[in-house]
View 1 (cartoon, one colour):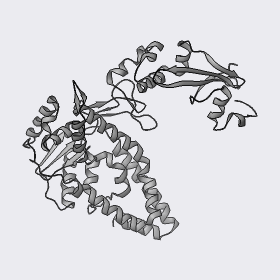
View 2 (tube, helix red, strand yellow):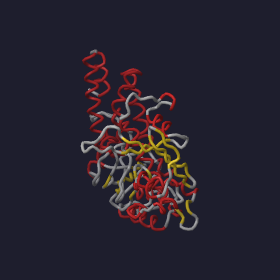
View 3 (cartoon, one colour):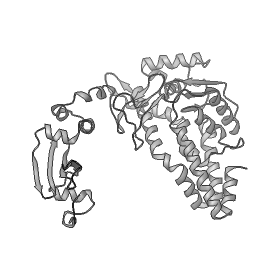
View 4 (cartoon, helix red, strand yellow):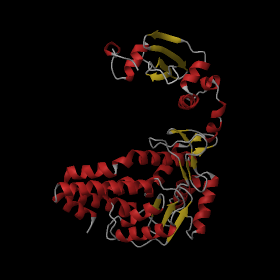
Length: 394
């Protein structure tokens, strides 16, 4: 019995069936969440078996060669060699790609592996499976399935894949003298379009993939559980390793203050602070920050990272900032920053004493348009200053 048939039968069984669907869907979401966050070496044997099964389900001959690359970056460079873009790659990446392909028995020339079969292997089976599931569940049932399985993974996984794509483009399209080569950037993005996202396809696989051997997506799902991104071509498939490190904050954003937030076994790594991409060397200097260093940083986004790391209240205290307004609710502070919106904060004192009798001070960041302390405090409660009349401030 397929997942589509079982789900349709559960719907027909009424509320008890609906409860069973919810439990099953939540279980599916948990399993695929683990897949999306998996780190460590790819299970090569399982990945290769999954690839062959995916080709078989698509009615294609299995690829003659399966090449394992150390990261999506290395895999993309190999794909560009095989699609006639190798001469435009930075020298070190072109040499590595050629060596990788030759070691796997693939001739490193344009057209050697034939055309991409991504649509046959991934796109068409996904569309057919989704259509069958939609017909079995109806519009409301499908929406419920997506909400319980795919939606919880979607935003986090999408952000991660976009960050990887950006990192690959930046590495392969950079010119030491001219900066980013826009034409080369386009070529890299086109190569990335041929990729199946492996473990990062977890959201939609959680919604539609079946565990049955007969499932059209069984091969694609097997690769996702075993490896990272992969590129299917007529005669070969290029498969990327999974990351060896993945660090995220509570919101699911890449985040690490003392090393790469995402790292692959071949050295490709991405650095981030609470989701904000940062240079590797930038993180190493965060412990040396001073108010003057923060103030003179020209990049507004990096300056925000500095402020978050240093602490807004500490910056206010040490930068010689002056209050611009005070009333019974607190004190309003404003600091102008070149090329960026000003930092505006309200200093408030908790009216409820701590166990030792002291009163804790809090700093509330508010929009730059705020002009009075009362307006700022009211904004944190979602009301206008005129409507802010608390019976008791805490």
